[in-house]
Length: 138
Image (cartoon, rainbow, N blue to C red; front, side, top):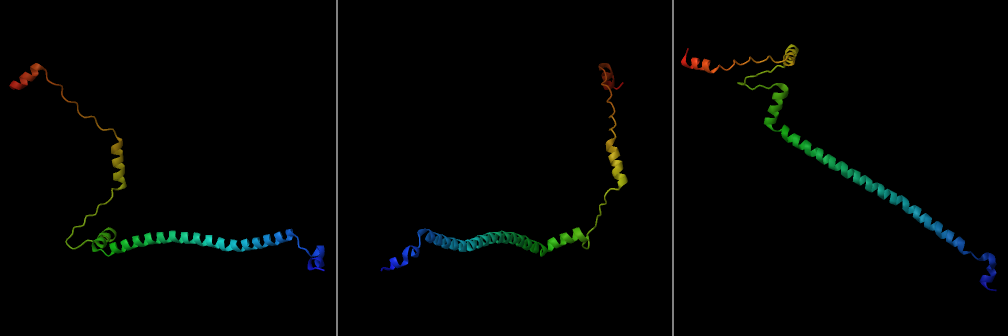
């Protein structure tokens, strides 16, 4: 007897179970590849987000560096001290401009609301005879 005869019809494995095993193995390999691929895409997205944040921080740093340079400028410091603290150097005259009072604001508003007075009417032109007499001095 041969070995194939010893197995008989039950000893043979059909093609369908082989295909099923191969499909399961391919599915397992694909499932194992899905997670790393998903992680790769997630990491790429995070890198892109971080690059955007880095650009924003770089711009903010440049602004802050420019502000630091301004704050080190004595002229800028003097200007800010004059505006915020009312700095007056010796020998300078200070002028304080006060805002108008409420009564002054109301009076100005009422004055503008009133119609302007009519200008005086010009005198009529003298006639020919009157003009000649004025010219002569009579």
